[in-house]
Length: 242
Image 1: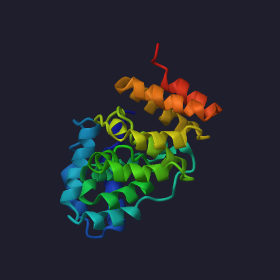
Image 2: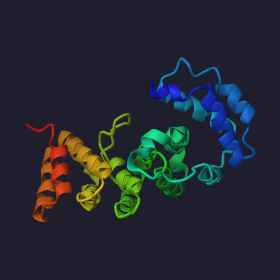
Image 3: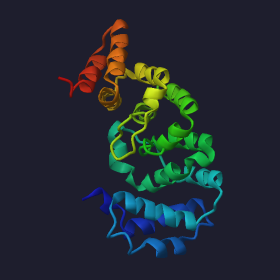
């Protein structure tokens, strides 16, 4: 099944009921009438945006109030690193809502994204916050690298990638290189392959945009000693280098 096909009419009915359960004033009828039967001709992100458009017309304009309600929708945290790409798809419209509106109250959004990423990825939702508030958000991500939750640690890396797939390029890694270095350095010995892959992909992106910075970062790591995780990350990051 293609990713887009997950977001079908049955999904919309179930999703609407989930929202109503935490937001009684949500206009379920208006939402369903606006979306059901109108998704078939749309690709993935067009479907997500169509759903979010209908969501916003069916609920309060109070962003912080809506986010508070969405906390109650999240459900239990994932127990395995790869779970977000197996079990969390139903939450993507919530993440898309935050991605589109998060700078309305970026601190509320950042706190919510930390919880969202424990169930489904927050890597898209966090990028507009990084663009508008790079220093403050990256300072928070530095703290996230020390979190006990593997998904939070991964997001600290994945969110700052310059070339995240399916997302617009952002260059906070270059503009705030000292903070970026702190994020990746804190994760260079992470025991989880899920995090290691993200850090390696980060380096691979960096090599495409500023290879001198990538080499400098790795040279700083090598002065600190070697680890199996670090060696794998560096190899993964340099996989396209001749």
